[in-house]
Image (tube, rainbow, N blue to C red; front, side, top):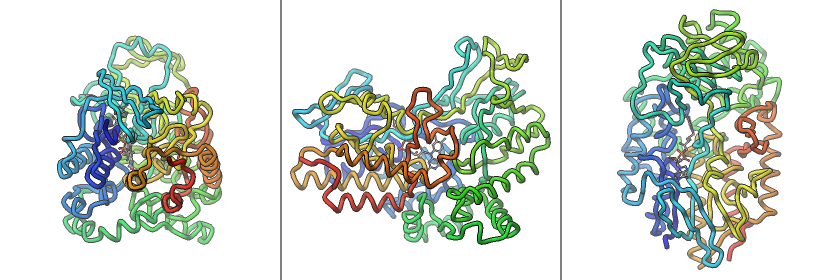
Length: 529
Ligand SMILES: Cc1cc2nc3c(=O)[nH]c(=O)nc-3n(C[C@H](O)[C@H](O)[C@H](O)COP(=O)(O)OP(=O)(O)OC[C@H]3O[C@@H](n4cnc5c(N)ncnc54)[C@H](O)[C@@H]3O)c2cc1C
């Protein structure tokens, strides 16, 4: 029997493997269904795929030597560079010998009398392990919407999160992109450079801030290394795990001209720090509306065609209530002659057939359909594991109405199973490597505590998971996140999924304190035996 099985070879799995194997000396193995290291950055290899977190923050901070050995080349790292970074980490820490690729877990059963897990792989192999840690990602189960007739289409169909490893040549092709969230906003300008025609199908108009990506100068690279301790300290005290201080000033403290000037400076600088220009953008309707109007004006100054513009700024939600995107020339792309925007709210697709689609009495010929339609986020990949816990309780049954979980880390009735960035953790609302390191450190400390005390089993208590669900809900009520009816944070993009705000929105800093207090109280809220 293994001491621990880790599922997933992205940021979470690699650090968890290193922590349990090399810090605690456990007998561990990691299973990954992809063919290589990278997780998100293995699967999402579409043109334009890039991180919105700045490179010096989108990496591990648990080891200063490791941090200093790697040098990023751009302000925001692209998909290939992040994948190369994770391969570098795996090599440096000698992780590959403990990883099996092309190894998909399809079922997991808890064995009551041995306090262990039986893990079933798609290839027929079965393993026993005392602990299981899911590092399967919040955004790793792609979502393709149901469109009448899609199965009849004879051209190529691609999803940004399952992008082929061979290069796609768009030259001369008639392309459709469905989805204008973060991935759509990244891929649309890239396809537009080559395609004969590009029809963009938009369900929701989205805010986007200019990324202002650039190559990093040698001075900046050195500065990031020199400032390691300071950046680490700021990030772990930042609400979203980013290396900057957020403003403590509400927008109401300035007059409109001054707030526009401040917003303009942040816009020109580019990046996610725009969200933190004032302290109350995500908490106060007035502050949010000022920012929303500011962004609308910016888009008005970019887009030429009045009806396209109207559709692009037809926002049905406050700024930040859905995942805020960063872009490079997204709005500008709609001035190109080969690009057209179609608002699905006004004109839904009638049907797709062999060579295109019918919409509003028109037929659009297509060679390629790209879905940039996101994910069954946070819970989707966990439910796909077919997990059966204590007394045969199925996770799919327990989560029928709500994804119950304590601290995002453990599910009642599922002992010795830890979920990195599970529902109820800050996960997708943060710069994720910071949230991941916090989770992995907490899990590692917890397992070390169990071993030191000769305990066989740890399990979250139902009543504490219920309290936690309420706390997650209460935090969301303070924000703008509930001021939209539709978002993947709320699960509304997936038919049949329970509706409710899934991640913890109280901030990574506050969340870390709560988790530390639980650990320091000998794991209050957990049953240990
Ligand atoms: C397009 C895109 C852009 C993003 N940009 C940002 C950003 O700017 N900033 C940020 O902080 N985060 C961003 N994220 C979130 C990103 O997912 C995290 O930052 C981080 O990569 C998550 O790492 P992870 O290891 O937890 O999960 P993942 O990287 O998703 O890795 C999970 C792994 O588990 C494997 N797996 C899943 N199920 C199974 C199974 N049943 N059996 C075996 N293996 C399995 C998957 O194949 C995958 O390789 C982005 C995500 C996407 C999709």
